[in-house]
Length: 380
Image (tube, rainbow, N blue to C red; front, side):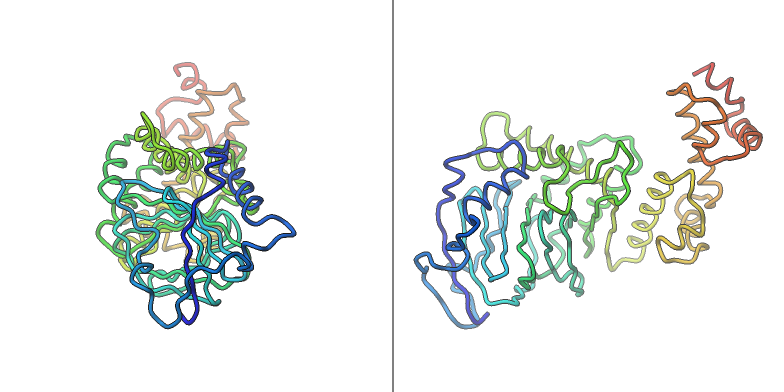
């Protein structure tokens, strides 16, 4: 690193406004307060220059990773601009660094699990030896075992929120969660599996969510209201802990992980072959559930870029079933829910489940449940 400097100061805005209704409002307030339109004083370096070092190494006093934590949970809000400025906000206050761009950080590991949420712009890291760019709305979960490096290229102003969780704390959090949902169980299992291998989880907001599944973080950083409130709650309780803060944080984290599971597509990247297969299987099952009425083997091939026979091999290997059998079971379960919970006609339910031939649907339903759709509804 040929040129950089560091300044530690008080977060003045936090003293004036300790809390916000949502994270989106916090982002807007911080940008207006520290980087007001028409005044680039903070970003251009016109403030009194902090002590400056040159050379390839960090001064010992500044070498400590700002994202290190001794607490079970902590937050770090970061802003990066196109001039190489980095402003980070945590319970310790505000830190300002300026680097010569493009910049690549040292390879390092953490002694905690890190959840990275890109809120604005894009953020770049080297993970498993490959540069990866994460756009606004995407989330990355890395374990303490994974060696990685941050990269700054200054192509756009960027905002990132880092959530740090100690490994034991996350394990306790996951073990206390008794979800019966298959998707959440797999997602939480993937988090626990990170204890043993080099891997990270990459999550992207659903592109075409159903009415009950709004996307997580939008490209403009405003995000889904529920997610934005959850993240703001975590920041507020981290900055100003009080009676009950620990319980609030734990509950908010469980809700956050559940929300990410339900509204994001998940990829587990790993050097372990079984982990790769199980991650693909999870995404395959999730896609089938969300598109059960229209999904086809050809559609899977187009969406996931593997030969269609590979999906049947995965389902046979890990679920003991074929693609056709698995899809039929999903459709029958969906039809049964509609019979129990709606007053739709059986013909409309057959169409919703993916069957245009009502007689064929009657036959499959009778064979699957042992009773006709009408009898099933009457007994529900």
